[in-house]
Length: 411
Ligand code: HEM
Image (cartoon, rainbow, N blue to C red):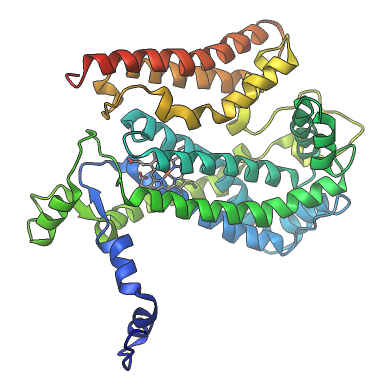
């Protein structure tokens, strides 16, 4: 048992019992970040702030929302939007934050891909990040169902129906997920539970794992330089702050991040007040009607690329489903599909840069065509873009990176 003396203050009381000073050192003041990074490395902290906003606004919405198929629509569109003071503001904050989380997640992911921050010891950061992406997708999908508008209902019908493609047990799984033969009140209540409890708990735990996974390999830097963090930290602590290649996570790195978060919040609240409509589908302002299918069903913009991979294979629903399943997990395999151990920004890796640009173009095409009705030439563009997506990841990436490995580090 440790020797406990009279505490000098509250912080000292906690420190004697929980070693809080040591914890603060390990996670903050002696957690070293390379100097050679740019503003794109602030996206992780922006994501943490956005998650905080989603939780706070969600708690306010929860005070008036009714998880009941007969009451949900009015509780959102009438009670929250019109009766409750500033209810509209919390709803707009929640909806815009849900969309912006995906904008920032995609930027964060593609920055990591561009700089090769997912390999050579950083695999666990990448894997925990990808799990966060999948759980965030489930969180967004379950949240979209809650207003019980036309798109909530029909998107839920289409997506839950996908489980029907599982061999042998498909239709049982669909029924189990819905809690009914069709999307109904039981579906709403279970997705409500997922949205407000189970998935947020998983997200919080995964954010903790993601942060922990960063602690040992440390974040990458703009040149992919392998830094000796201990030697550079000693330099820093000996007073050579200019010569050291590292800074402290707190206060140095986080203060800069807080500046970026402040700029981001200006943009965010401008969107919340003046352009919130980009995060809300007009069709969802019609009450859910199980008897009237909307002429064209599509998901939110951040799911369009994977939805198009599903639809793109228009001649075979089963094959489309297989492609869709692969598209959900393919990024998880990135550290192994990339056969090269070179960690450098893409502009210093010509073959990889070509792959990166083609991948972005392909994802944009998939997103644009995912929103269009699958008719005429759009069907064929979708088909080519879906097949190209898998070829890029399973053929082009291993090929260019294997060649790069052979050329060695003289890139
Ligand atoms: C809510 C979700 C997420 C949060 C809160 C979060 C947070 C963070 C933070 C704070 C950092 C360190 C600073 C930075 O590089 O920005 C980081 C780094 C990283 N994250 Fe995330 N992240 C999230 C999602 C993701 C996703 C979806 C991926 C990719 C699949 C990902 C992959 C990475 C990688 C590879 C790094 C290391 C970057 C480097 O070494 O330069 N993260 N994340």
